[in-house]
Structure formats: structure tokens, C-alpha cells
Image (cartoon, rainbow, N blue to C red; front, side, top):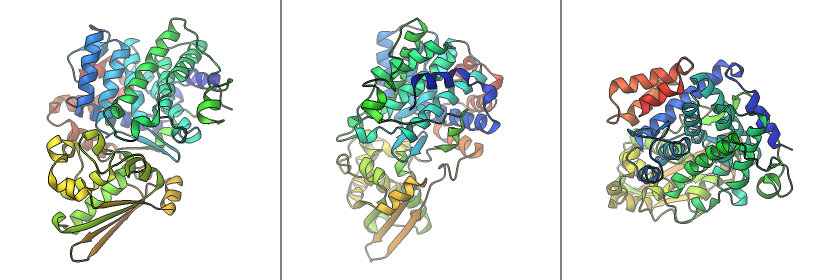
Amino acid sequence: MTTTRELAQFSQRTTYDDLSDAVRDALKRRVLDTVGVAVAATDAGPPRTVLETVRDLESGGACTLWGRDAAASPVGATMHNTALIRSLEYADSYLAPGETVHPSDNLAAAVACGEYADRSGAELLAGLAVADEIQGELAWNAPVRSKGFDYVTHTVVSAAAGAATLLDLDLEATRNAIAIAGTGHNALRVARTGEINEWKAVASANAARNAVYAAFLAKHGTAGPRNVFEGQHGWQEVISGPFEVDLTPGERVHDVATGRYAAATYAQSAVEGVIELAKTEDLDPESISGVTLETFAGAKRALGGGEGNRYEVETRAQADHSLPYVLAAALLDRELSPAQYASERLRRADVQELLRIVDVREDPDLTERFEAGELPAVIDVVMDDGTTYRVEKSAFRGHPRDPMGWDDLEAKFDAVTAGRLEDDRRDEIVETVRGLEEYDVSELTALLR
């Protein structure tokens, strides 16, 4: 049975020197991808409301608010910067059979603590390796979704471990940080069921903020229930059930999927498929009489109507978690980027009418394939004249079986930050991330101000 001490010891002993070259490279690619989607979200609604909240509560601090000419405490910066990361549904995922978590949710907490404590880029990579590894192992071995808890229940633990590493807490303080985070901040799945709203994009920011606050409480001597996982009425008894983790120095990062499209991860293969089909067959959207998507259980439940109506789409938060909407928009526009979620776009008659003839069905065989590591989708598009076009996908570009390299990620970074960063600044960020070991965290955050 996994113990709190085991996680704390892993956090304590993992250093940059323990990371393989492949892990270092993969972690840096995660940083670039995450920073890019954060920059792209500076005008999004959730980060703006978080920004106003941070400004209302704080006046200055040691940590950069990305995309703003302002700073805040490590707690406030983590809240704001994680809200940027999550708002566009454009970041990364661990696709465990019973849970989907987002390693990018750990970055802002690690960066804020690294900036506060004046850490190097190498130390930042070690902290990210700790956080991402713990998060991935919890997703695979201790899923909580079926028990009614949100995935950020994992994030608060992983981000606390990463924060403790960057703050250089000793073993007992690290154990306390994890204990405080894991005891006090277990989120409910209701955030992603029924009528979805903006909290979906802010929940992980709240978790990461709580993780950093827990680490600072532990830094200053606050003790938590250090048997939070294994103790009576603890995490394993109440939330997850018994589990074991197998922690390696960041190797789980190779299981990360990169978001190719601005949509929930479970939709990526289906979106890629319909875009390819629309382009290859030059489909006329006005001549489509029906669209059927066969998918796996998790996608049907979360995005296809199993946890609420996914045909009533009036807001961005509802749209990016609706398979009918994302497939309709992709067929019409032959792309799926943040532009497809503008209010005037998602309310237009063409997409609203097309999404209502998208039928999402669960296929048990596809569920088995998903649990074996694929992200399968089978789409049939039926035209008015009876012609049926079919496309089948087992994964998408960006899935661990078909990962994005630096060229792909730099192209995505350039696309999402266009119009928000000058070319020279974009080049500086890419150069800094690619050689992160040679820089301090503060040099990276200076480019994000």
C-alpha cells in the first residue's frame, strides 16, 4: 500500500542528475507546449476573473503573472497562471484507463515556487519530473472519477510534491505538504457533469493554488496528517481504494498526450478524423444528413451525453466538452482552434443545426482498445444522396503512439501565440525552454511577463 512517506521520499531524492536525456527533452517539450497555450489564453474569461480576484486580494509579490505587467505571491501567481493553462482545453493529458489528468496543471506551481526560491532551470525540471510522475502514477493506479471525485484531486497532491521539491523542503516538511494538500482539497466530479460552466477551467488552478499554500504552510512548520494515504479514513479508504505506485525519475512523461486541437482530449482522434475526411472528400456541410461517432465509454460519458446534455451549447465551456459541437465545427471549418469557440461562432445557425444530427454511440470494443492504450474513433458521415464516408482512427498526432516532436510543438507554439508575442520574444522563449538547464527560472518568467 502506498504511503505518504513514500511520495515524500521520492520527492526528496529525485534530482536533475537522475533524469535521462529523453526525460529532460520530453519535460522541456511539455514546458513549451504549456507556456504557449497559456499565452494564447490571456484574453479568456476565466483568467480575467482570476486576475481581478488576485489583484483584489494582493498588491505585488515575487512571482510573475504571465502575460501581465504584474506580480503576485506564489499562491496568487499559481492560481492565475494555471487558469491560463487550462482555459482553452489545448494542453496535455495522461490517458489512463480510469482517469484523465493534465500534467500541464503542475507547471505554474513549480515555476512560481522556483521563481520565489531563485531556482535554476535544472531544478525546475527535477520538480516537474516529481510532480508529473506522481500525478501519472495516481491516474493509472488510483483513479477517482468513478467514486465521484474530480481529477484535480490528483493534481493537488502532485503539485504539492513538486512545490515542496522547488522550495527544498526537508523530508518531514514535504510529507506535511503532501498530507495537508491530500487531506483538505478533494474536489467533486460535479464540476464536469450536467450544465458545465467556467469552474471546469478554474478547478485545476484552485487545486494548484491550494498545493502551493500547503507547501508554504509545511515550510513554516504546520503539520498535517502524515498518514493521509494509508491511515484510518484516509485517502485510500475513502477516495481511491488500496493502490501501489512505481515511481521512476520522470519516465511517466513519455505517456503524455499533446493536444493537437482546442478540445477535450477524448475528442482529439474524432476531430482529426473528420477534418481529414472533410478535406480529402471535399465534403459540403450543407449536404450532410447525419454523422455517427462510435467511441469508447469514457468519451461517451464525459463528452457525448452520459453526464449531461451535450446538444445545448451556448458557451465555450459547454462547447469544448461537447462531441456534437466539436465534430460539427470541425466539419464546417476544417479546423478546431480557439477561433471556433468565439461566441458569435458557436451560436451561428450552421453549427447549431449540424451538431443536432451528430449521434454519439459507445462501442464496447473501442472501450477495450482505449483501455489498451489507443484513443479510437469511428466516424460515418452520411450525405443527402445516401453516400456514406467512413474514417477510423486509433490515435491522433500528439498521442503517445504518435508523439509531437520539437518541430510540431514549435509550429503549434507559433500558431497559438501569433498576434500576442513579437517574433523575437517567441524565439527567445523557445530558445530558453530548449536550453532550460542553462537558465534560471526567473529568466524564463521574465519572458512571460
